[in-house]
Amino acid sequence: MQLHEIVDAVTADEPPLAHRVDDIIAAGRRAERRRRAGFASAGAAGLVAVAVGGVFALSPGGSPAPDGTRTGTVGAASKGTKAAATWGASEPFTFTFQGYDAGKFQVQDPIVASTAYQIASVYEKGRTTNDRPSTEDATGGLEEKKRGGGDPTLYAYLTLYRPGAFDPSGIKGGKAVTVAGHKAVQSSLPVGLDPKNAIDPANKQLAWEYTDDAWAVVTSISSDEADPSFADLGELAAGLKPSTPRPATVPFTVGYTPAGFEPVQTGTHALPGLDGIASAREGDYGGATFAKPAPATTGLTEPFDTGENGVKGSFQIFVTPSRNSNQKAQAGKTKCYANGFCNVWSADGKVQVQVSDEGTGADLPEAELKKIAQSVKVADVTDAGSWTPAAKALRP
Image (spheres, rainbow, N blue to C red):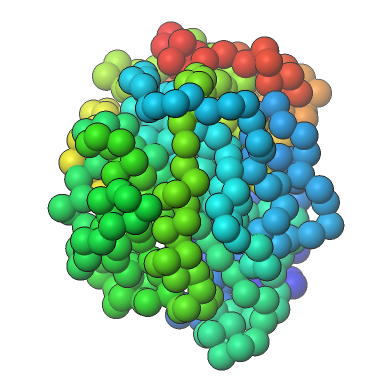
């Protein structure tokens, strides 16, 4: 992306056209439309750098991440309270582990919850993770980095599936291994995580059974084929421990949803789903995905929205700082756009609620999107203690 393109995107009232994104999740393509500058893609296999403001800590109620750096050490895992001895039963939209350090990795507190899993960002010491949009990595694309130029990068996340949700037999090209005493499967992933593309050895996935019939999966997209290795990723299995279950919360309640739509995933201090992981340090407040029908919660091999267009037949709610949006804030107003979304701004114009079904096939009428958006009641976004458990907040 050239400088003039960044300026155009920052100042545009309408969302910019999507840029091709190759070696990061397709969720980034959707998230870019809600950012001020979108993504910069470097070549056919380029990692994505993001250029937008806002830096907050990942964990609910946590302190802000230190500013001025963009290596994986930023926002390191919180130490939390003493973990429970065993993994117990938990309801959907519940967090059951906390951030932890494992070797050279820092697993963050989970920020995404769903009916089938929870997701946390994973950082590595000495490697850049471009989920803090205010710090664009302009030091070279993936191919340059593989030749030894530019900053080393890693985009990684840990998905913890509920018992019975994940099917390890569905991993293509999987190799059965043992990791820290657990049954495990390792595999390399295609460019862009798109099954139509060729396998890139720098992209790895390691799944392990963390308790009976329940699997955790780390997905790793690196600029370096050798780092992290599968052995490195195995350290995450040894460090994963249960914590006291706590409900995922959101900074809003929903007063209306169209018939048949069910809540399927959320973001706490983040957008819902993989959008939230791709922009984890952007400073967003929260969000939720509703789908009709709701996706299956068994037989999974990846999060619901790994595909390019997100969850099929869905709409999403995003509650964000207005500064993180492409659209110019209009204090106290509601505005709908032809792209398939509507915005509502707070009275002071600082908080934006967006409802979108863009690209998902839900094809809701504008009147419905507007009705949903206007039904959203926002809590004090600065006081996470006042937020509502998702299981309650998302049921009109």
